[in-house]
Amino acid sequence: MGTVLDSHFLGFTAIVTVVYQLFFFIVTALLRFDKVTDFAGSTNFIIIGVLTLILKGSWNFRQVVLTLLVVIWGLRLALFLLMRILQWGEDRRFDEMRGNLGRLAIFWIFQAVWVWTVSLPVTVVNSSNRNPSLQAEDIIGWIMWSVGFLVEAIADQQKLVFKNSPENRGKWCNVGQWQYSRHPNYFGEILLWWGIFVASTPVLEGAEWLVILGPIFLTLLLLFVSGIPMLEESADKKFGNVGAYRIYKRTTSPLIPLPPVVYGNLPSWFKTTFLFEFPFYSRSLPQEELN
Image (cartoon, rainbow, N blue to C red; front, side, top):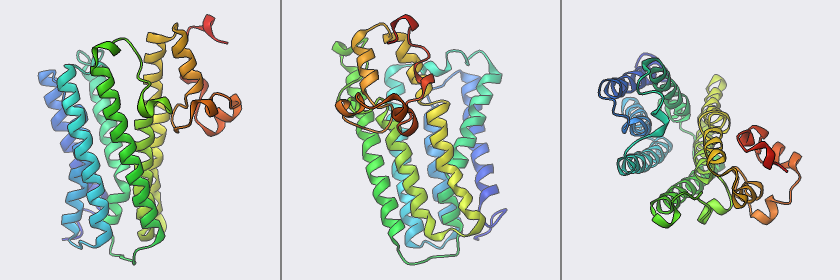
């Protein structure tokens, strides 16, 4: 029962992911109903984790814990994003895709790649015959996941409450964790998936260490592609001429939470090198306003 297409379930999880994402792509394309997009992505992680755990049938403690962590994260995020989009009514990411089947297909293909790649540590752990005793890496990884999960969940809720308040309409979120990071939810997500990787390392051997591509892919995606760059561009276009926003952006870390009084006084080279304050995050700021 433990070998399905390949000993590490890589082919099996790829097929499951493609079929699952293809189903929701068809629903989205035919009905022009994009409210299930994030739900499809988050729940796909749950399906991969649970299926590989059941198919292997070992049920060792490490496998159960890592699968449970993925299920908790996936359920929380899927339900949160589904309820949010049902409340807001539309997903603006798809404004330019609804009438362009090619661009829509590319998005869903990319989402399938994201799910399969980021799931690699859990997939390989659940397929493994090795079951070493608990090690420091397990505990460290679980702690990283716990901190990241709490940061992401709290940040999401803080922003939702902020956005739903009529008095905050037309403002950027700068309350709670958003005082210390412009994207604390992404910091939490990156941290928790690196935690899952760390907790998987006691099992890894040889080429299995390539599962590090999972958290690397997620980190690069959020830093350079569909995460921070898109949100920074949107916020700069909306608030770029507002002095208070420019101060907020200059004194608030883009990712890693830091006190504004500390971050604001750091040299630019340090911010860029160690804190991910890349120049292209500000390319949409009105040039005449730049200091």
